[in-house]
Image (cartoon, rainbow, N blue to C red):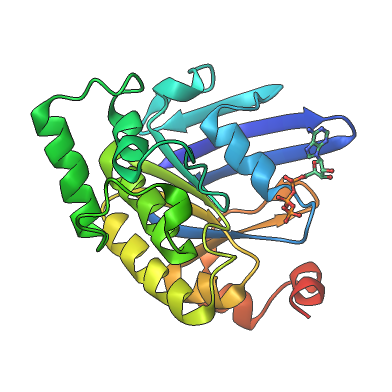
Length: 228
Ligand SMILES: Nc1ncnc2c1ncn2[C@@H]1O[C@H](COP(=O)(O)OP(=O)(O)OP(=O)(O)O)[C@@H](O)[C@H]1O
């Protein structure tokens, strides 16, 4: 399923984001200098920010005016936004029913998702009693449970060491099978490892996706300066 940005313009004070492109199904990285507009792009897709012009179309349906909660979107940010006073199981259950009145089958779904990310049996722990990597896994389990076809990731594993990050990206690739992913990253190695295609954002302009390897091997001047 494709995501189309049709002649989009979004203004934030003196910053303007513009996008006119189609994102193909599968895994896409989003790279660009600090302040270029990567997070703004994700907020637009999530529905937290509205464009002043243009349409956002998912799978042929215009979602420009759709409320964030109704969009076909799951979001994973660097801060995993787990509720510290709830158990791991409750944190996941919130994704299915915010009032936590889950039936037996739904609690089984929670247990199954935890199993899939290798955290079987930890549902009664508080997030504070988990390692950073385990918290990342809980966040991935929540994505699994939500099962939305469009996945937005903003530097999800930036705080993790290289080995753990590689492991998480592998797990994420499995979880994301069949979805369309936009993953913001500052690390070109992550883009190469995870995403066949990459969207470059330059001073508010979102470029159409290009094959990640070709883009990073022969970067345009702005990206070259940013990559160093
Ligand atoms: N709430 C806001 N009001 C006005 N301008 C904002 C707001 N949030 C961000 N901006 C501006 O919009 C521009 C794009 O910000 P954005 O966070 O999308 O960049 P980014 O590429 O994600 O940067 P980084 O890599 O540093 O996270 C920046 O110039 C920023 O100053």
